[in-house]
Image (cartoon, rainbow, N blue to C red; front, top):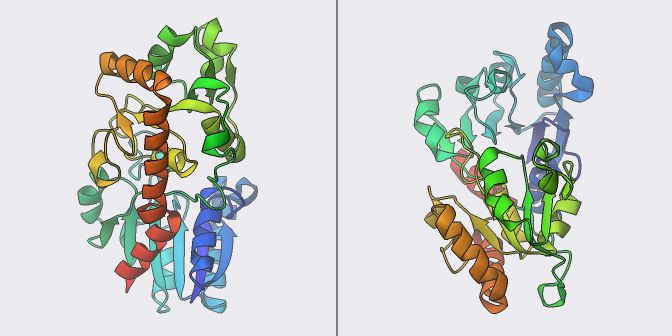
Length: 319
């Protein structure tokens, strides 16, 4: 099947579009890609109209048999409809908040035009179905073979850090880490330069995926605490990326966690700050239990939660 992936970053390695492209190719499909944010032309009305016309032209002249959009906030109303009218299947896999509640520019303008609309977070599905009855829950996944690949074998790790957190410096995350300033911390992401000096001096700016996966492998505990907003995507991609590197994950994700991992066996979950502290102290000392959970989480990702698994499910629904 000819698949055109319309992606916000042009399917460049190692970003999400690349992972989706690789999954389709591993299933034997022929893939072409289109960067709908190329040179930031989507930010101007005239050039964005040209980009949208190019999408229609490439899809219909190749021709594609499936056009898959990843996000697509600047794709104009009517563009997908023109492609569908030519008998080409169209789908959107939305990895972000689709209504612009958090950031207005993220709003998807043409939800109803797609043959199928796939959403990372189940909390948005019923609301999206009001715009497109063919909306389905399809969560994030990971690529443990090409992108989120274990860089240090678990039996060879020296653990240069006790606790790792890669993500934005939300207040709840700052508060979690502050009591552990005497521990070896590994931190990266936006906003940490504005926190207290102890955290600021130990943090890195946002890192590339390859560096992130190495940071995971170098830490005894990798944190995945959610931000304060109820609009955050749950489970986020990090939920699958951490175990894909065969690393131990501690998160406060409660909604839907049992759909993906077994608590205490493949992932560890805390419900409040008190339990967080208890679990951190326990797993920093219990190497055997921590590494057993890391291995079991990795095995579960390989069995059920790769990007390839998600694409197989998408194609099943589309058929």
